[in-house]
Image (cartoon, rainbow, N blue to C red; front, side, top):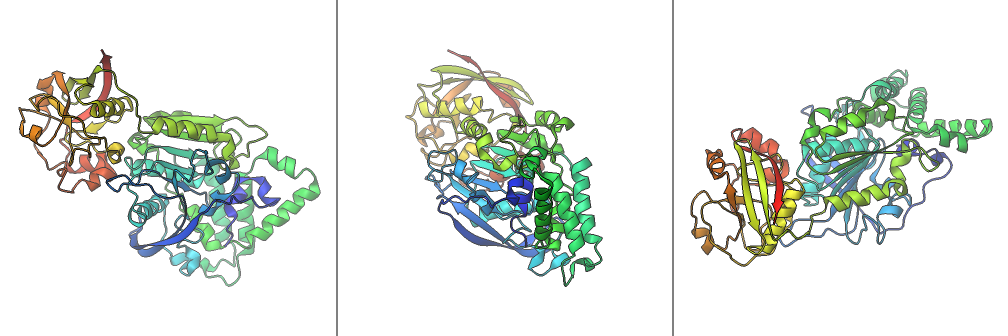
Length: 523
């Protein structure tokens, strides 16, 4: 199988010389998902190969706090990111994803490289996977294989960028930030789909194909497919500079033909078939974490003149679209692997998505707009400095927007805050953080609907009080009781932690919503 296929898409210089590899320590391993269920209903024990750099850091509760996943392009491998132009710019000492501070996971996608794929023996009998299957497999590797229940960053290039969008809506509370590089969050159509269709039809149309049971590679189909792939992903400016004479151009084409014949036709057919039903557009509003979508102006796969990104990014609550102008440094679609160009945006994304440690004002009011109407909480820092600082930053970062009563459980839950000294009593209308122990408060707030003095004896420190709209609080739907949250100590909240609102909306449709929560006044 052609392990460097992704590099053909990335840059014309791939024909000139292989990319220089970084010397960062890394580990390779396999994880098997038993009886993995594909979207077709087929089941198969699936092997996922992966590379890691760095060491997972865990908090007192055992949650990993420093993990990031980077997903590769079509036909590629996770180890492609060990190149100097990628790892050398991002993973070294003092760099944005310094592996002394981050735990980096580089999976080989389902159907690719050293992970389970058609060329292992099943050929066209291998279950047909799609992008959601591939993301669910990566999630299972992270969650069940590496015991990671939260990611600091989800990032990917090309196909991996499309997987980043899918990760964002399938698991909206699983990450702090997302960065898709060289992609569009819409159905693959027009020129992009036409190239993919040409690749698949070229392989299937070769008489030597024999429905995937060929003895010799379907050479003409593979060569035609490789030609389409090359034209799809390269940049005219760089191609012309590198292949500046007809002799150089002809030699480059000859190398393409040689590489095409080292490609497994079954694997290649599956690569492009997997993208057929990709379409995040209807789900973009489900993405919660900050997202920076980065494309380059000379990318022929995602041409900016289509206006897709400007339109679709508006659907992402905390999304931003960045278009890198064509320059001598860009490489068309392959700009996604030239980290030096877009590294400053990654630094910014990591900064704005970190769990903020800003101190709150001494006193402030927060307006909570709900499906039953608004109410106002007044918070006092001298009551509970640690808790009030956390509440202030949660509100400023939009954490509670589009949440649900009774439980609020997204990604800040893995960052516990220290205990505060007890101050005042849990009287009607007071607000505090739910907890298991004094040092285990994270994100879940409660409002006392009546005097609740037993909470004083259990160490529940109040951080503020409802000063307007207590009648609204009284009308919030409470028919499920503790059922919708599962109880802090009952251990039933894992599905809520992983799936968030979709799980609550499916199981408990009558829950009222927090529409928007904002700091209204500091004093």
